[in-house]
Length: 609
Image (cartoon, rainbow, N blue to C red; front, side, top):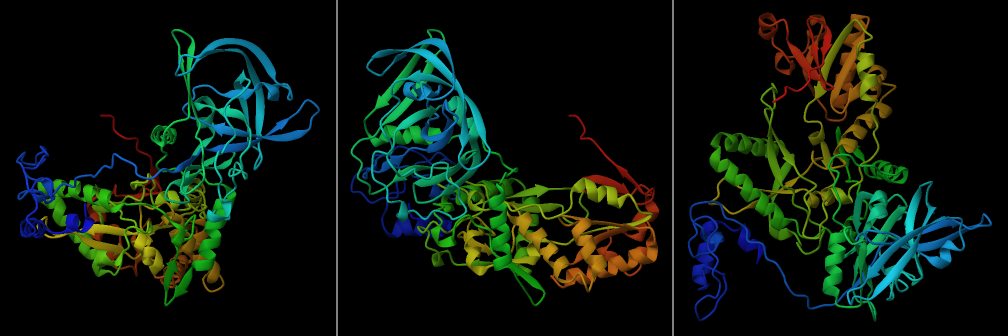
């Protein structure tokens, strides 16, 4: 279904269907009665949900149930190092197969290495009930060719695992492999003997979260042994395909095995199931090389001009090599769900609308016509968004959060192709300890810190959101122009700008630079001194230094009023009236509560429900 039809207003959609004499159910043109029997998901009447007159439209997901082009599928392999009986190193190729509950090793390999062989009697039966016996298991270690990783494994000993893989030619030069990637099998494209099969019992021990698309079907997946290459490879000259699936029947101690030489359809299903693993949503582990690459991208692309920072997104691939797939359809669906929530809570809608209008008025975003994008390029991304309420906040009770982890139709998110970057600030515990060493202190934070850092215009096409003021209007596209919370790299980019300020102007503002390096965590600065005049000078230097990068401070509080005499009342955490009314006024900072009257920190555990 045309995406522009989905984006059009309700009245425009109705008019289009009426003018073109289309069926109100299937939205196609046909002479006879419509063969479809589905109904509107809102009112259950016999019309398409996109033509429903009262409530926000619901997107109907289109599903293709046939394939008219046969592609070859590359199975993931790793090259592992082994030690033979004479102490010499040698290398073999291992196949990764999550469809197998057990791992396997060739019998001729066990004769070559030092391994612990034990008797293990099991029966294997294939899809034609062709039964075979397993009599031994071998235990040994395998080693990575890229790092110090090693793995203790236990495998069933068999005379043959599968055919040599891959079974088709691959032009490695046609694949745009990122330069910083270390492959688990540098010869993944060369047909070679499979000496090991790592089943589900082992493979998910080494599988990491990171996934990086190479083409429309080919992906890199990170493991402890390096990145594996897997997925569809189009336009190759394969003559046969092999797949192995092993499962155990515990009651009968029978292993069922499939050795399939059949259609791509079943192989596609196996590959889809292969990569369904648990997602880690917030913690991103990166190798040193990835962090070095993020730092390199920052230093090469960062610009500080007219007091404003501009940065690039630290992408794992060049922008023109991205193949993200379709994110628009799912973003539309998520926005319709948000509108349903607005319909139930008009107050929330008004606050949300005010947030969007402020975002636009500050120049942090702008409307763009969706027609300027090539939606088929795979280099456009739409961010879903949702509200987070914090009634305890004195300044921002509603925050709109953007979701960079939403998967496209290819199972890839924007966060998947972004580098996390290293931590460039002092440890949280160290900042708290430094804060408690001094007699006089102040606490402040950087206002809208992420949004003070502009994004390279070429990368803004990866930060689009959908919005409209009424369900009767057509959906509009808003392009975010600054570093955006919800993206994996945002904290690194914003905090790295602070560190850059400190390094550039440390001779001019030595006290302010020291605060940014030693006393700042994300956007919170917790600063102390035993001399009040020194603390006031530190405050002045911090304000002036941050101005050079376009940053401003607010939510000021201190355990001594003299420190904040020149701070406007609207920039303070508490007014004089607030302080007189309540001597237990606390500031939330660094995950704890700070009482400015008693000069104490308080930890509060969540209340049990």
